[in-house]
Image (cartoon, rainbow, N blue to C red; front, side, top):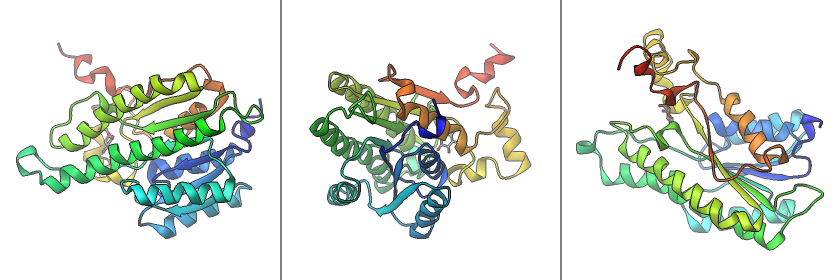
Length: 269
Ligand code: BGC
């Protein structure tokens, strides 16, 4: 199969598509032939730059503003998508933030905002996507499935993370949200999966890799000895969105250079 056409004529929504992993996923979906909806909340210019990059490469895209944790804004974003492209085929539930603090210093708003965006936002978008997938059903010209939902989770859906309890709790929640929804939607031929990135070079973790010392410390946690790039995740997302993964549902694919392999035990234990 022509790889460029894996997602031909499919409409893909990427939440948080204006930066980092989301931007790379949006661009990769565009070059796989999809019409891409680049969702953003505050970085309008960055979202338009992603749209431009997709169009310059011969693809189709629009930018749509919505705070995924706000139900009204999510509903209105989906209306905009249906008006423009008629339907939705793939949701990439990618929006995510960190607001790091030790437990005893963590404010309720630091806790709440992370849960609101990373977990509630993912729920709201998954619900609207599933409603549309079930309404429309399978369109065999486009895909064997009636729709696909992909969560950008994290290795921290498994690995506890001191100083980041809000974030780790949100990703643990994403794991069972994904699995429960996958179980519920499989009979409707809707596939639901997660990608679990490890350390990927984006703004969210810039201080973990932007000096030699910090990168060296980070590499101790990565057996494959390379910090990931957004494109490492985008490739997995395109595969999960395509029929190449038609028998894959309810699972997290970790793309983490081996971060989950308990690297401390390579020499200890
Ligand atoms: C976090 C990053 C972190 C990585 C590995 C990601 O989910 O957002 O800040 O570098 O996990 O710990």
